Amino acid sequence: MLKLCFYSLRIETDILMLTIIHQKEEPELINVWQFQTHLMLDEINRFPKESKIILILRHSQRKNPESKKEIPKLGLTAQGSIMARKFGESLPKDRQIRLSYSPLRRCCATAKLILDGFKSNSAIGVLKGPLKTLSGPGASLDFYCDESVKYKGEQFILRWAAGLYSEEIISPFIPYCRNMAETILENMNDAPSKCIEIYVTHDIFLMSLRFGWFGFPPNEKWVSFLGGMAFVLKENCILLFDIDQLNYVDIPYWWKTKNHERT
Image 1 (cartoon, rainbow, N blue to C red):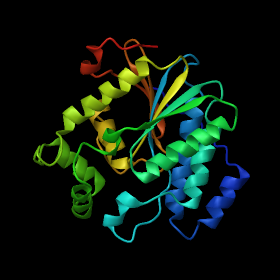
Image 2 (tube, rainbow, N blue to C red):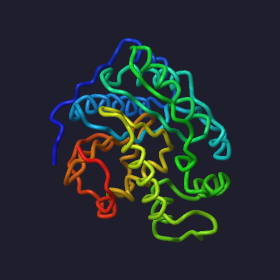
Image 3 (spheres, rainbow, N blue to C red):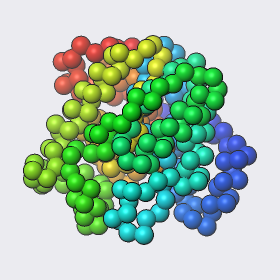
Image 4 (cartoon, rainbow, N blue to C red):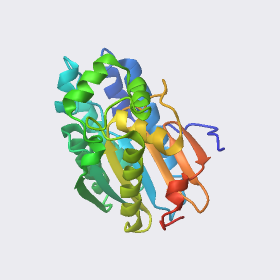
């Protein structure tokens, strides 16, 4: 296991100013958000230079809903838009990026702003387009909204994984996680060397994939806006940055049966 011994947080003047402006609205959330985001950017820069990186990313900060029913339609805040662009500006310029995203408005906006920021440094990037499965396993938006009123995110994931929902309402947990992995790994195979494959999704599905792929149970260490997990497939293991730490983890046996590229 690799433990991070220090944090190289690049707190720039404009980011600090935005934090001060936003202190009246969820200051603790903003501080955690910036911490996870900067830590991820630092660790991406430390991955092997020639590796292909898979990055599963939560969208940038969204507006606060008046009710749970409004969440699917919400876009980004002004700060969320600025931070998404700055995220792109901070990615390593000697790599290429390709972005896929959930069709929902805030994920689409996050992906486009990341690409804009990345290209502002004369770097090469491509917007691949929406990927429906990044918005969930086929259940209706009303279902997610109703369940979010009754259960916390980690409770919903555990109930889904335990098979407590009908397959007529939502696709089973394990097949969803495996199908997502297969899609992502197939995309990685045709990616150029040193590419970062970025998938912009939602917290509930990012945390679900984290559980379904690596066995990390959902808990209070929730993913922040513009937080997530980045990993590189090696010959016998995965080098994984998970929310706020870097580890070597085992490759799921059902990934090993496929002839995917390794670093």
